[in-house]
Length: 203
Image (tube, rainbow, N blue to C red):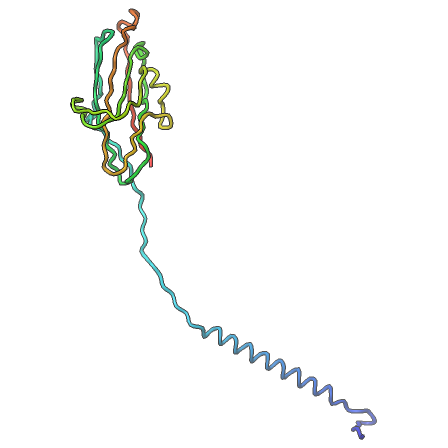
């Protein structure tokens, strides 16, 4: 079997054949890559969207019917005297179902009489700051002295009351009964007390 020589050395055709094969392989790989890229770029697409969403916060609004006046302006009390007043509180905010409305002390100035004033506070329906005649109680939320109310119910977290408005507007009436105790000592003559009551609702 003959083999071509160049100046006495054999010519290796296998090297040239391998180079051609490698080049062809690279070209094939490039063509496949281009085809895959074109196929990816040609995929179907579609989108949908919703626009214009808006958000606004609700409000809680608590009012009462006392027209800014004090519930009690009583003077010259004697032991055993009893006073009674009502006040209607309304929840009228846009938050339809807030948390409980609670009653607590808005502060006191005790001139020696607060420990002798016995207080009962009830929740119910009917009646108003104008008159308690139509009031119908549903629960008693506090019984004790005016001084003790200030210390035991001093914030929303320790507030008294079970009313939980379930709609807006919604109202409830509170009846306050205050009695100067029969055991008030003679030393309390001329003594006084000033109290504030605060209702609060939270969402």
